[in-house]
Amino acid sequence: MRKLLVAGNWKMHMLNHEAVSLARQLKVRSLGLHRVGLVLFPPFTALTAVAEILNDSDLQLGAQNLHDRRSGAFTGEVSGEMVRSAGGSWVLIGHSERRQFFGDTDAWVNLKVHAALEAGLRPMLCVGESLEERQAGRLQEVLGRQLAEGLKGLTAASATELALAYEPVWAIGTGVVATPEQAQEAHALLRGMVAELLGMDAAQRLSILYGGSVKPDNARLLMGMPDIDGALVGGASLKADDFVAIAQAADGVVK
Ligand code: PEP
Image (cartoon, rainbow, N blue to C red; front, side, top):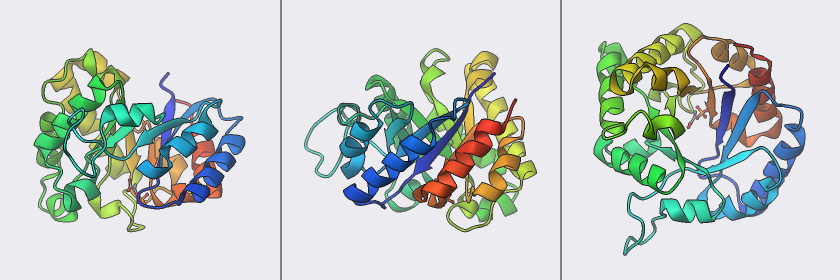
């Protein structure tokens, strides 16, 4: 049985005192949830402070991005090793906002996946199509390209630490959520592609999270689908009540 994962992407929100307060609430309120893994992705500036709160808990911590190089003259960037030293064990890679606004290409995403693994971080690779791509019938092509390029050079063994997040761009921050059937279709496609790229065993072990307007009232149905192994939550992860409700929904899903 695969443990579901629920991750909160705090994006560019949360001053340090707010991050600490939210992390404290989540730590206490998630104590009884043993059948779901929880990961928090605060902004870089709050990583250390949140790490101190989560220290003696099961909640995991990650960064929202990393640079592909280990160190150097890259002003404003953060390496995988730095994320590790701040207490992170995960890193989001290829979020659509990075692809859209900060020039993260498939090739760079691939370098970042390798850099994360080399630094001992678990990459959560985000993929997803735009509305235009979906309407043009290009779902399979777009996901296939993002996945094949993003995972280039990985072996089944190196992929054990990887998770995927299917995040249709049209559902992110829009309040428009994919139907469970639409999400399941994309997840099954992705799992099939991973089976071709890395083998059936890796595909079956891989967690594929759905992201895009997940809320307490739609979480259970989405995560009840056979190939949906959890949720990557943006807006609703900023409110303790909502994030805990989504985590509880995941904890209640038995697969
Ligand atoms: C995200 O940005 O990863 C996300 C899923 O955002 P939201 O839940 O706000 O749509």
